[in-house]
Length: 114
Ligand code: AMP
Ligand code: ZN
Image (tube, rainbow, N blue to C red):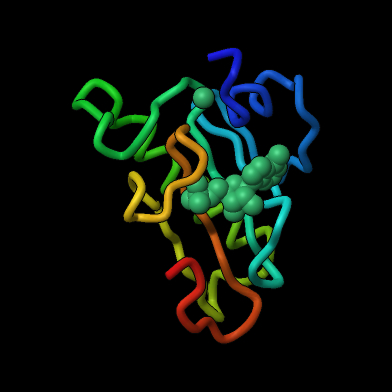
């Protein structure tokens, strides 16, 4: 979707600091980090919300999980611990309507994104 900010990051129209990438997903630094480590993992196709993940799209969700593991390793927080968050729709706090997983860590977390 040409008007979707995360699609534009995926296709390089909007700059980002890439942390991990494979055929299915991209991970990049959040522009407004809420913790010392705050990355965003997105599928490389436009899926609006978690509720739009149908069975044929499940490989993207698996790839997002594997990417979160890789981000945690690369950022040095896999052993200390971290948090993954997927906000869904308005009351879930979703602002960008392209499915994404937050990866947060680097300090003791409280109720960020709550
Ligand atoms: P959510 O509230 O779950 O939709 O989170 C959207 C996240 O995307 C927020 O943490 C924003 O800081 C982040 N974000 C928005 N625009 C950009 C951007 N251009 N580059 C990186 N992160 C962004
Ligand atoms: Zn999109």
